[in-house]
Every structure is written in C-alpha cells, then in structure tokens.
Length: 316
Image (tube, rainbow, N blue to C red; front, side, top):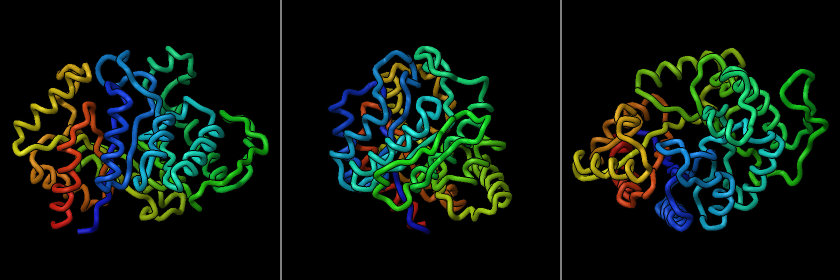
C-alpha cells in the first residue's frame, strides 16, 4: 500500500485562541503533513453567531508556532477577497512559514455570511464558479511571477499586476475544494495541484471519472493532481464510545443531532473500523486524508488517527 499523507483541519468555531494554538502545536508535533482551518465569518455548524476566528489570520499565527506541517485554508472563499490580495497573502504566508503555504480556494456557498457583511454573492453558484475559474487562473500566474492583465468582460480588472517577493516555494500549490462536475472539476483539471472532495466510495469513483475526462480535454495528466479526502474522525476503543464523544462535541458546537446524524463524513469508531473504511478510498487514489476536528479538540483522536489508523491502512 502506498504511503498515506495525513492532515488535520481545526474547526475555527466554538474554541478559544489558546485552545486552537495548543491543538495546532500538537498536530505539528505528532507529524501530520497538513494543518488547515476554514474560511468563514459565521459558524457553519449549529448557531451561526457563536464565536469563530478568521482563517488567514490563524494561519499566519500558526506559521510562527509550528515547524513542519503545511498550512492552508480548506478552502478559501473566493468571493471574500480580490484574487490579487489572496495571492499576496499566500506568498506572505509562505515566507512566514519558511515555505509551507498552500493556497486553498473554492467558490463559496454560505449566503447568510455574505449578506450580513455586504459581500457580493453573485446571481447563483454557476456565476460564482465562473468567478473562481477566472480567479485561480490569475493567481497561478501571479504566484509564478508573471504579470496579469484581465481580459475585457470578466469579473476582475487586473492591469499589469505583478508581485514581489515571489513565494519561497518554486511552485506554491493551489488546492481547490468541491466536486461540481461541469465547472469546479474543470477548474481543478486546469489549475489545481490538489483537489479536496468527500462522499461515498461510489460517488468519489464517479467524480474521478469526470475529472479524468476534464483532464483529457485540457491535455493534463490526472496524476499531477493530489487527491485529498475529507472526513471527520472520532476514535475510541468502541464505536459506542466514539459516538458518545462525537455527540458531546456537537453539543459543544451548538449543533442539533438532527443536523448531522445523516452526514456520512463523520466517521466514529475504532482504529480498525476507520482503517477498513478508509482503505478503499486510498486504493482509488485518495492518498491524502484530511480529518476535520471540532472543538473541543480531541487529543485521543489526534494521536490515534496518525498513530494507529494510518499504519493499519498502509499495512493493507
């Protein structure tokens, strides 16, 4: 079995800064490959008005408090910021972290936070994905040291835009989150170094087929794109105990069970159960796994996911 990379996303809601900092340092010490957080202005589980921190600011702070783990948003809301500012922010983070930044980006989906902040949400998801495609194309050029001038009629109006300093990394990776078949996966095929998706094995197999078609259409080798699978793990000696811990976390996040009980991205169980569930995804190409962890951040899960589950997967 091929080696599996592993990342942790710390939910940025319902936690204090000291809790988030402690968890980030632990993730780094344990040897995780990636450390992520959301890009939201309102909480997305349960009460939207509970406390939540801004994503890029968290990454900048974590950059100086960690040593090894890569850092990124899963994923940035393209609607929130001008792409030139995002590219500049990602390059700055790369310098703060000595070359560990990943630029995560997506079309954005949460209308209430846009409406409350007066941020243009567009006419619909299709338009936001058109904006995303235009944005990522420009950011790739900026990060690669090229000048960008927008074509007439687009969302953006760049005029001989160029940036310095360049990122520390010769090729700062772009992660695109989402699995929309007509537009998002086409943008992934064109520009992404990493792709994040979640769902059942049947659904993911289908999405890979669609992505392969888009890659063929644009002349891209699909093997150039790192597939990353999103899950939300809670690990204990029994499934019943894992479920109990998960339910307590949802209560802490003011999230009714009715909102999440049918969400198949929450994986609660023993190390062997999670390894058995994960193995088919790894075999189909998802060799990077990113587990979202709600506050209060569960130390036992963080330790056992990397210490027990992944070795079981890799052992076949």
